[in-house]
Every structure is written in structure tokens, then in C-alpha cells.
Image (tube, rainbow, N blue to C red; front, side, top):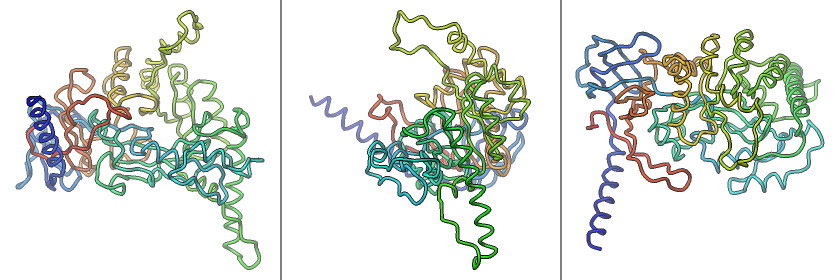
Length: 464
């Protein structure tokens, strides 16, 4: 009994020391010296130095002089990569807050459900929709930038796998809301947001919504009507601004305001049939667009190249359900999709389609890298896999001047490993997010919500 108590006290003291370490102040000037540096945008430096000042990369090269007063991190035997980017995620949005905030049912002046209300209750209490003018399933005004919180326990797990940035979206409803580019660090929500307007998320299989419209034809018709209404609304506002004394003031419509605000729209296109539907829809919406899903990219690559469509690839490769009837015989088409889906990244890369990677539906962030490793085993080049996790994502969202590679002037988001990123034996030693060093926590048994740990951090220069 005494031995058990002693061990418990040692564990508690260790935890307190770790938490104290997490509050350590980060110096403004840091140099990672003599490491292998994979810049992504240029040549690999077998022995290079990266200098960080106030969260920005100020120098990188093989013969860089370490500034006087810099906190030096010994990089011998280590590899430095750009921080990985999850190109379509919900990381940073605690699930309860995200669901409640996006559960409002209609657009014109309708209040969203209070934070304490369950999404189901919000839908049950919402008035019945009689047509597209009621904006069913639309919360285009909801912004991920207003929902993100550093307390989301998934953030620590993501950093532990090397992810430093997520393009995160609300996902409730048909038109769920505006995504945001967030760094997976910082002590406040405001410190996390890199860009509050990543795009407007549309879904054909909405979460947390049922009712009109529900059939694919009806949903597509509703999207078209929504954009037609938005264009009319925009014109009406402009005419009123020119002659407010003679022209009636347009009724405020926050759903249409959200549509007009969107930089781009995210369109679901998992299969060739869905792709053709979305290409037609995109031509009618006349908005910049990105396809997400694209599980059957091995069949879609040439068409995507022809249309110059950027892609967010879902790497949760289809598999047989664990609880499937053992006597069920799957169709040849189903078996073909399961077999060929992991070849999609290689097919997209060979066709010259710009693609990035989404963690959507994957249990742990490390499984994203494992899924890409499976694609590497069937033909994907490692450099293309790495680019999909870094620079491609930054370019697709218009942020290549700030993220995605190790270059002067970019945000100091870095992941430092003890080997090749796609080797199962490789460990992430630490990451930098906005120049702040984070050490992955020791592995702990899974707890409620997936076993996400705390937020231990360490100042640069601490022993690894």
C-alpha cells in the first residue's frame, strides 16, 4: 500500500513539474542548428540552420550564422520539416460548441440555439421550412474563427503527430458556415487564427439536419437558389445605397450576407458522378471552389486536371465495416474501390492535380500519415506526399506566403523528428507553432473523448 502511495506521489509531482514546464516563457530568438532541413520549396539541406525571431523564420541555410543571444537547439541527428497542415478539419472547435453554434435552423434573423441546447432540441423547436426562402439547413454566418478554442483536447494530439495548422470548418447543415485557418498553439482563440475566412462549407449529406430539402436534386436546386438570391440581394443593396430616398431598403438576410462574404466554396465530390454534378454547380454559382473528398481520385484525376480543380483528399480509405455481416458478399465495384482508393494520391500527382490532405473521419492524426504511407507503398512519391501535407494546402487556400515551407519571412511552424516522417519508427521530438516550442506529451491510456492529453509545452533549448 505504501509503495502504491509513493508511486502515486511521484506521478503527481512529475505531472506538476510538466505543467510548470508548460508555462515556461519562450525566447524571441531561436536557432535550430546542424539539423537536416527539408524546406519543401527547395533543396534539402543535409546540415542546415533555421533561425526564428518573434515567431517568424528570419533565416535558413547551410551556412547561416547564429545570431548573438539566440537560444540554440541542437539539431544533430534530427530532421526539420514545415509544420503539417490538415486541409479540412474540425480541430480547434470543441465538438459540443461547434454543434450547438451551428444548429440554428433558418437564416433570416433566426437566432441560433443557446450553447447549452442540444442540436437535436434546436432542430425540433425550429419552425417548419416551407421553401428556400426560409434558408433551411443554412448557417452561412457561423464562423469557425469565433468557435475555435485552445482547450480543444484534440489539438495536443495533432501537434504530437506533427500538425501545426488546421483549416477548420463548422459542419452542421447544408451550408454549414465559414472555415478558418488556425495554428494549433497559443493561449487564446485570437492567437490561433491565421485567416478567419477560408471558405464556405457545403454538404450533400448534412450532419445535424433533416427536413427539406433532403434528396440530392432538391439540395442542388436549393444551392442554386441560394446563390441566385444572394446576387439579387447584392444588387438590391447597391441600388439602395445609390438612392436610399427613393428605393426601399432591402430586408437584412444574414444567410445571404454569409454567402456573399465567402472567398470560396467547399464542394463534396467523392466520386466521378459527384464530381460532374459539382462541376456543373460550380459553373452556375460563379464562385471559386475546392473539391473535398475525392476518394475515387484514381478515376477522376484527368478530369480534375482538365478543369484545373484543386482538391482536398480524404485519406480515410474505404474498408469493410468491422460489424458487417460475415455472410455478405460485396460487389466487385465495392472491392475495386477499396483496392484502388489508396492509389488516388499517386494518380492525382501524376496528372498534375494540386491536392492537399484532410483528416476528416480519421480516428487519430497519426493515422493520416499512416494512410499516406499506404499510398507511398503503392506508388506515391514521398516528396509529393509531404507537399500535400504542407505547401499544397497553403497554396490552395492562398497562404503560401505565410505557411507551408521553411523559407524566410514565413510563420515559424516546424516539426522536428528523429527520422523520416513516413517511417513508423520515427518520433516527433517537438514542434514549433508561431515560434513556440511544444514537446509531445508522454503516451497515456485513452480516456474519455479519445484520450487527448493536456497542453504541456517547453521553451526552446530545454533538453529533449
